[in-house]
Image (cartoon, rainbow, N blue to C red):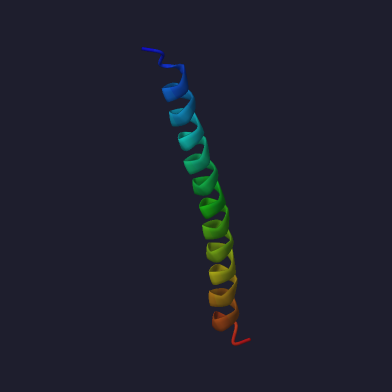
Length: 46
C-alpha cells in the first residue's frame, strides 16, 4: 500500500487546522486587548 497520498491528506488537514487555530488566537488576543482597554477606561470614568 502506498502511504504517500494518505500522509499528504493528513498533513494538509493538519496544516489547515493549524492555520485556523492561529487565526483564532490572533482574534482572541485582539479581543483581550480591547477588553483590557475598555476596563481601564471604565476605571478612569471615561
